[in-house]
Length: 579
Image (cartoon, rainbow, N blue to C red):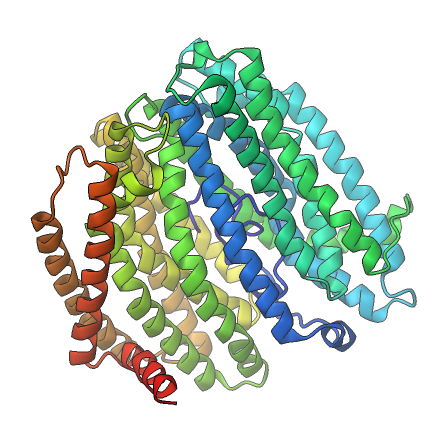
């Protein structure tokens, strides 16, 4: 239900787009969309310390997100907004083909099956994993080849309505970048094998290699060709080979970086062609609902990509800006909301398994209140400081001041959807804790349909300048709808979720957030700098001072209003400082 441009399951955890170029499988299967409550076997858990795994994953995720953000920043700085849109479209094609064919099924089906086989098979699942990897390599290679042959058709689908120079460049880049789906799928499968054998470090850190290679490729591009905005027809073959080949090389290096870890855990990759032993019919049945979920999402993303491609111009917000803003949202969601969901999921799963549904609702209510209280000031910062953030974070090289202004408008609208998105995700994972993958897949159908109708309507109602902002507004409204529908369907299953307490907390959070926003706006207004054409230094001053003022004001108001989720954190900090 994310509405992001890229795959939701394997890139950023918790059903988010791949904001960082990462392709990994979470150590906790419950953190992935469509995964039932399947605990790893005891011998896998005993192989490594849970605390050590968490630390490695947390550090790896932070570095991966950081380098991924720099990667996307380099795309804009090197190519500018218009050609950056072309590159983003070409990069989107292999990701969507991969997600449609394998992404969701991998996380919802293959990991639990690999875990079960490792526990029950005499060879601890070695032969089964070898068969699976053999079949996957053949299928991925065939798919990549077919996709490359059909590159012009894919371009016509996703970049319709653009001139020949635009679509030709998308096609040329696609020939180089469509093979990425082979290495992406291979990386995800190897990561799954490693996770089921208790190895989590390599799948978390390998994507960083990908990001560094791409950063290096675009740095070399700037060094050779400069950082000036150009038009698609000005891209020569040397430039196309450098950026497209760099993206492909990054994913290939990521996959290669996982191979030493396979040897370390004792897995030997042997080609096996007795595919009947895989139980393909069982895998197909298990993955049916997740395939439905993914297919509906991909149809929704197709609409977004097509509309934003039509709206793309030198100064208007297209795919590149939309994706950059979405990354900002997902960074906040990934650091805060996913951490809360990760902590609550084992508790809710255990309580559901024991029939203690009152504990499930208690955790669900608490999680909703925590997510709302903690993400609200970040949403305020995104909205109030959209201009300074866009300049400080994105305005480099060929990414102009006008592009930064267009980014700020999209970020302002997107901030509205941050909290609803996190709540909708929490409610979705509550179904997975029951366990139930069918209901989220069915809920996703009307939610995506609503999103598409809103986005198409907003696109037709406003000019191309506001197309990306309209896509974000459609996302935000659909997140609210997803949360409401999920809550209504959860109540008969688990009982009352404490709606009264949730609404009281939300009311207080809204008051604190509005107060912080008003103070932040006043302070930013008083600081030097032209809002239409901010210099980098003025933007940085507004960002630092404005962010600090918003944070302190929200904290003071939250304490005064006795928002429990904030006072608990402050109390914990005071106790630790006291010690």
